[in-house]
Amino acid sequence: MNNLALLDEAQGKYAQAEALCSQVLEISGPGKTQDISALYFVSCAASLYQREGKYDLAQTYLAQVLAGYRRTLGSESPDTMEAAANLALAYLSQGKFAEGEPLAREAVETVRKKSPEDWRRFRAESVLGSILAGQKKYAEAEPLLLEGYRGPGPVLPGSPPRMGRPTL
Image (cartoon, rainbow, N blue to C red):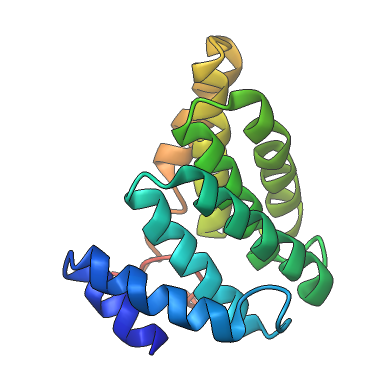
């Protein structure tokens, strides 16, 4: 059912996707299970709600996903930090820069330390840079935005593949 909801969302059938999301969230949403696949689906549902402009609902679910990932994967997992960046992005979407900044900073610092070439680092830097730009902290935002734009780059032929890096 969750895959069908994701397919409906990809096709722009938001009302159908939301109805399926509601059903799945009733069955396996946060508080009902700590299963990683359920948390992943809740994150996808939150993305749908955010696209629909239902920011408070999206933030609630994203905060629950982040808490669930912290419990199950630990605070330094790249997936946990991706969830932190997702919540920071939700705050950014609403102009709640002060709420999003600590989450984005945590994501950048952790991913830089644990997985410096992972795509999530560059995404977190872009999110933090955007939050800082929204607060008119341009000097601090610019290098983050430039680094986020640069991204991990392609892997050259013959190099070992790396997670999160596109290959040529």
